[in-house]
Image (cartoon, rainbow, N blue to C red):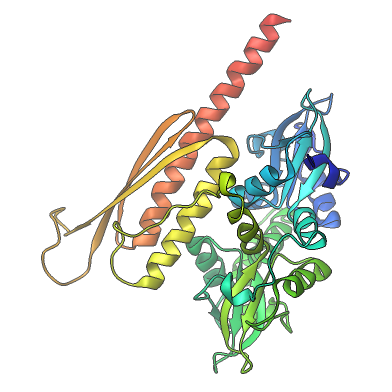
Length: 388
């Protein structure tokens, strides 16, 4: 049996909980990593520090790692490779630590590590990328703002947007990492006064055309999946827009899309997926957007807990809270329940925009799951200290 340690790389960075964000972020930028292990003095894993989490919390250079890190997720060194690939697809993770029996970090498995493993061994059939790409694509016009791009990616649960000109032709790509990195760079350099606020506001108000990657790396819909993997690996990117001959975008292909196709062949290791159908009525594009958003959150939850069941209910309300019975603006009452190995978590949100409402309910559950994990970790530390 091939185990995950056989494809792991040496850890480029290990963070300590007492380190300051200002000293660790430059190293993350230098090595191009978005998630790194946080370890104790014996290099045992105690958390994960993610670039996204740092930026979302809006922390400064003197903030300690321990106040920003997420609960740990990892592979034990003898984990079967196929099971590791299924987990990476479920978690939508970029880098996952590998630990030994004592919890000491001994390696890192990246999405590119497993993509190269699948590529070199020819584990996929030779299929066209149009059969596995995400479609329809969510795009943005070159003249729209960075703030709009960030909002659109957060709302849709995606990490990149093809940028189009006024003729609906692709001219570039902007990623959430591009935006987060720039914002955090501004926040790290802030000084006394309010100049940094003006700088951040100015950046967010700028058109995406000023910060997008151009010309974009794209691929045609009839390209072979192995050629697509070559493009991703050789350019060290996580996804590419799929375009027709007239430069119009018809989909987006990511490394996760490719790996999911492989995992689907492993009957016993099917990826977690929530199909949104009965609860969501109306526009098919909105339904697909919500489905992607929900599955992104389920991916995060499954990093820390075994997700057993997921249910969502949506009611349409009037301003008075009664069921909607006439045409006009609709208000939504969303209730979500997630059953996990640590118990059930439920939430409710009422608002006017359905995707926003669902995201708010999922954020509530995420906070409750994190609080539950932190309590269990605290009890575990207390038990360890008492036993010693």
